Image 1 (cartoon, helix red, strand yellow):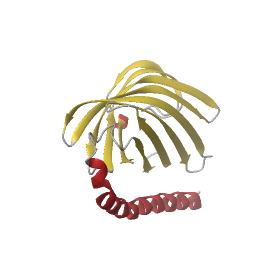
Image 2 (spheres, rainbow, N blue to C red):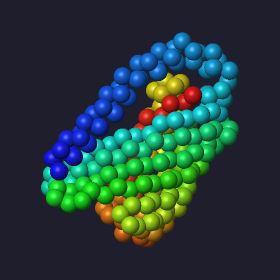
Image 3 (cartoon, rainbow, N blue to C red):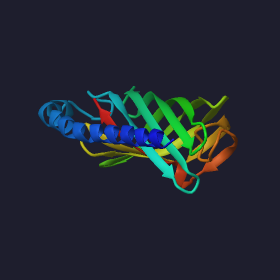
Image 4 (cartoon, helix red, strand yellow):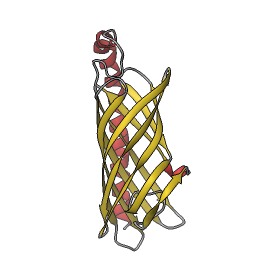
Length: 201
């Protein structure tokens, strides 16, 4: 079990280092090639319509002796200056010392509507359907999430979503542990906060 934990730490460290070393190259690309594109009109929904990004997390709970590693890439395409369509895929592995580990999958197609730009911030509402599977349980959710987009550069953006309004049935990626999250309502909890990096191409 200790070897598995060490391997997960190593994988998380390699992914973080890879992202950190790629950011300077991406920033240089934007400096050399992005200025012409920025001059062609509105950035959102303009010449750069594709967005790729995601988040990576690692958490070790010493009280419960539980380790969790999550990888969540996503892709989006701007239909116009306000509306984008995309999908998120998440893979989460959890293990508890002395127990068998569990892996959960998530596919979440979504629509994102941007509004209320206060440079460099832009607010959005993201709504969609989520399908989860893992540990012998299949679940789903349907709902909306508010969020904001912080433009670090024309290429690199920081995305944050916080809260959830909707319905869930045995959904594995809820704010509570396990796969038994069923119900509906509005939730604004620390666990509903999500941060990620996006690249606008």
